[in-house]
Length: 327
Ligand code: UFG
Image (tube, rainbow, N blue to C red; front, side, top):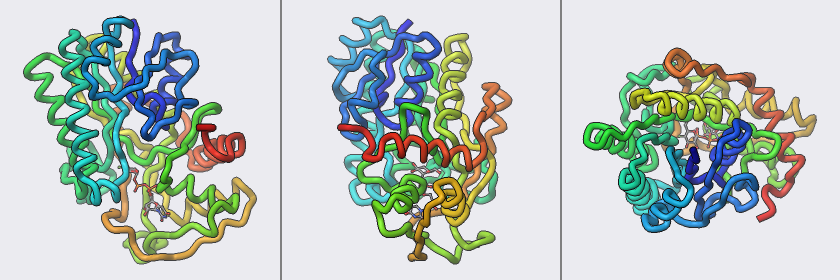
């Protein structure tokens, strides 16, 4: 039974593909390489170059490879960019994604796993954030993800499409082969490592007067390998006939921006200059997950919850791939 991984040449998708292949699954990666990298597409997977909204290509691919389940990672995912260019976000994250689901439905596929985000919650009323917390996204990116979750629920009611939506908190770290290489890069840990190796002068600390112990924002960093584990568990759940559901994926531990920088200094042994700058618009002070539901229902247990291990693995990958992926 083959699995189609749409967006399988991106950061999280490539690590999930690696684990699916280690499990002995047949994988087809579909990616338009607008944000992903050809060399992040696993050589043991079949690679199809194209858009996830190209229904003809999807129908052919699904039929040719006997696809039974789909994982959907294709998305634009930068909060700031989504505020400046919402049309691209609604086109990519909604229109194209709806076409992908329609192609699945036409082909009789009933198992669908969706990369969602903690951004669906917006500014939380309290932490840790459970799945019952209010969803009130504060930017177009979060709204597109939430609308698509609603769409998937409607598709279950109308067509019996079973889906699992996985709401990632702050994905970080790397596997041995696959890591984080975004262009432009906006995420804290890769930027801190850029500052460590002198690719940038310093790391900016966005805001120093938040209501947190050291004044900088707190986030729940989750190892990309642990995220990948959750996808495999979600797939098994659907393959066994489980119901549609949605889950937070985080460690339940928050670390401040300053703690991340300090940890990176220890791991790299390098000086990392930092400077306090103003707040980044739209940043909530604290985002920390309660992932009890994923633990209890999926049986998920993060293997690498320590920040040190997350940053160590990101650093190891960076040292092996100083300029990221070749392409
Ligand atoms: N930060 C800095 N300096 C930087 C970059 C980031 O201080 O140069 C801070 C941010 O203000 C934030 C923290 O580091 O407090 C983490 O920022 P990231 O940009 O790495 O991640 P975000 O928390 O903004 O967003 C990420 C994903 C979103 C997802 C969210 C869920 O990019 O898609 O996590 O928690 F929705």
